[in-house]
Image (spheres, rainbow, N blue to C red):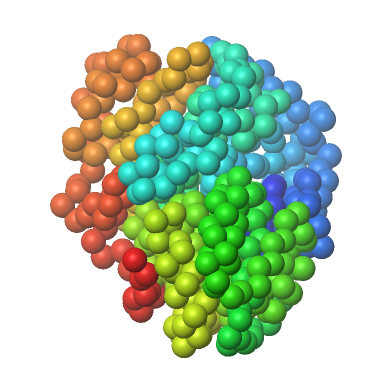
Length: 466
């Protein structure tokens, strides 16, 4: 009998919708549950949108400060048919993933797929991004956000998973790391990571995107930020204005707060997509490749390594103007980059069934100790900022995860203890923490440690503009 899968309960960059397509194409029976539709993807349909157990669930707290959720019988009836639960962007059936211990107790396979902001700590992100020559745009806003009070897990139940408090972001990461069978994320966001994890990149379903490579002498440049602050739209527009003032000829189109299906139509009518100056490349970059555009974005191939060789021309504030001049003036270069992008999409590295299978395979790979990425930023540099709470249950989870999943041989566990990130009485157990075998791992860049044979993605190298 085929396994039955439930995916939800949020929609970020079509991931829930596209994963549903992918698992179905593999032959699985799949339901999607999204409690609140995204404003950008309001036209997407899901199997379910409501459940009847939320209001009847209670959330008592144990002596360790952890919530022991008590849902009604209808919760157990609801989850009984499912073998695999895919949790998207730090969400699950109950608030703040408090159902994950229950799901694991019922023998369910749990996959946690993180999408970015819900796990990205501002202090560690600033370190990571600076080491890659990037500006972290959320830093000052996160620093200025009023601090929270948090003594137990219950104190986070009503708080948005995106609130920048360290305890809040750590809760999202540690709950996944403690209870999921495999965790998926990316280094620019997964700055709090303790446990080895996997990176699959965005999913792209091309059925709704028409490919067209116009080859215009005066190209159309499209920028469609889901978050203008994160994508660094102001800096992008300012440098494009400078280029226009210098005589570079192009037509600029900017779409904001526009439904995704309208963005995809606009991609087909564009020549060039500028995704972002921030670390990585989002779904918009992949949609641009699918639509036949030359794509520019903050993808250096190291800070966010998998899938390999995404055909995104790397841009930062230093090379931005040279890169844009190149793709605007050199039609052959632009066309070649667009053709490379569409070929990458057609090869299926980011196709829903390929990513779905990658996620299923990760469960066995995790058990075998063959993960994609081995995080060290938190263990090396993590601290508790002044005024930030660190509830005891998170210290407890830090230790539990280290005991189960190990640490780098060079990790100074006593530094974590002294920093208040482990239980005060953890000292006698630190010697029980297993150490990773790093003989087969390679540091590809700052804070990016991965197997030497990690090759998921394209073998074709991407051009570079200095």
